Length: 300
Figure 1: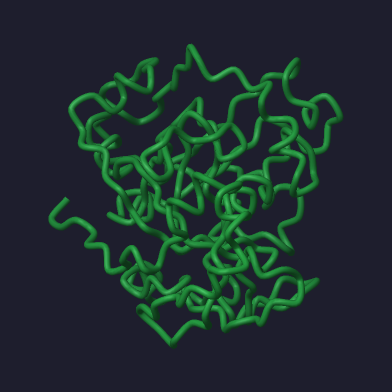
Figure 2: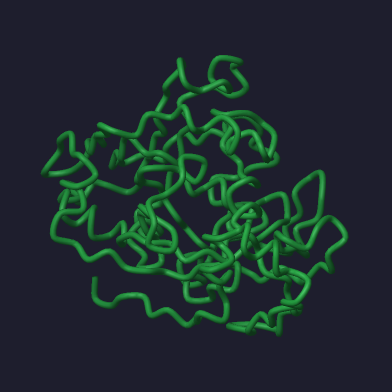
């Protein structure tokens, strides 16, 4: 890449690690903590926040392989087997193969990326992910000139995944990006949060993070990465193309058919927390040029 992403969020924008990693201690002292100010970045000022607890972060998840409720993944994902783990890299690449996570990341520096994370159900949080740029992995794989898209696939372990047993979706879960999206410096493969390995419900042992898109684009527990010349099928677009487009960029001007995306609430404040305006591209304006000339109300 000619340039790398420069983080402009700071520690003030993140749920404090002491809160994230030590829920019991924080809960005991919550009465004296008061509100923590959330620093404004890239757009309008944010309201003061109560700190997110570890419970907030790890019990409010979407991972349909482990159930459809927001607390189901935390209850059920302990059954996920994450070792050994291999990732198949194939398609239009010069160096296809089956790689362990260690082999895939060998020689690459694990970075911390502090990203806002926005879900289509209009909730959000700020998470310090640890991982590498997807572009580094694709460059190592040797993307061929005909490669226009990157497809991803989640693991299927029917014996360990209650959602798979119940057939709540057509598994395996699949996602995809256009090549320029995949190669953008903001796009990463994450292996941890706060320097700790990913929890199973967070997508262990390796997942995609695309911070300017709705959270369901950031596919969890990846077992296959395929470079292709045709736009890949994606799970939610296949289920309901009217509600879930291929691009799925955070866009306050395009409503989900069943609710508005113009505002959001931050996890930790409860259902009656004050809402705040949703930022175009989740505030990551540097990706806007990827969509020059596109009608983002049609290509949503």
